[in-house]
Length: 193
Image 1 (cartoon, rainbow, N blue to C red):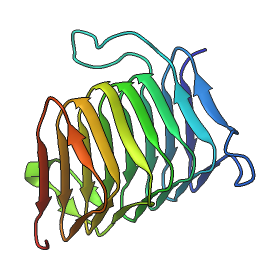
Image 2 (image 1 turned 90 degrees about the vertical axis):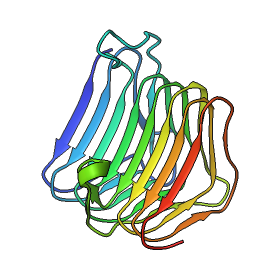
Image 3 (image 1 turned 135 degrees about the vertical axis):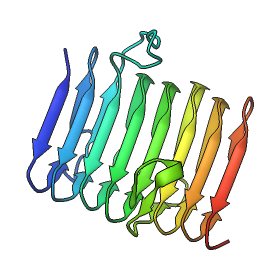
């Protein structure tokens, strides 16, 4: 096993709607999917099972999952990591989370329509919508951050030890529980409610 990297000029589709068991997995390595000008459709699972802790640079060498779509990102199958950071990015369009994200130890970042850091963010108009009953759960330690250029509708968000931050340029609807045992929860609707 090793790194799995897939870069497409336009769109990427993983798996089929008929079988969410189809997917991409690696035991020791990272998964990185990049659609340079198009969308990403995840009908198959993404899984890493690396167990090494963070290095001296505060990063995981293995176990990370990155999905980078120039436009829309749709997650229809579960994403799982043992130790590793997960990053989902829809650069200029909406992100639909229709399945779960589960991590033992690591950070989860979900972004739609936001470019740049918090202090110098440019909003390009994407929303994040979690389907009813879906969840993002970190069972050990790690932070959860959702950022959207327009709206966020969240469902179950939980981390055992870490912070949870939701930042939307417009509105945030917390439709289900947001919990952390050892951390803080911060919801920021910059121009909405």
